[in-house]
Amino acid sequence: MTKHICKEHGSRTPEQKAIMERIEKDGICPFCVDFCQGEKPQYHTKPIIKETRWWVLTQNFHPYEGSVHHFLLVCKRHITKLRELNVWEIFDAFSIFKWAEKEYRIQGGVILLRFGDPEHTGASVQHLHFQLVVGDSRKNGGPVILTSLGYQKQKDS
Image (tube, rainbow, N blue to C red; front, side, top):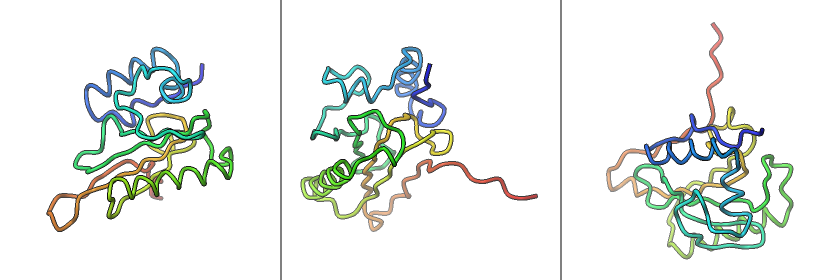
């Protein structure tokens, strides 16, 4: 059985941990079940905001603490590697980001692309997806938003 999630990496709340344990027990890819099969989502609790032939945009159901917006853009094909994306999917993804920037009046944000083995990326789901994270202005005095981007190489002794 292929392991589709890595609950050790992304469990920020008890609710999220429980859902990830259920997904692991079910042995499925939650993004495929919730976004690729055209059925009612079983694991993801936020509505779909925008859907195209290749992508589904939704809010992250456990956003990073302090974020103003935290969106997921999930590929509707189960792929894990960059080389599996076609040019139309890439074009469409950035068209959705441009739409979101205008729709939500985003002044600045960060786009993360999670792909490949979660043991290298810190992702919790092994299914290619983007995250669009929007923080508040530094002028408002809050701390920075932190996330896992992978794992540090061991320092040479």
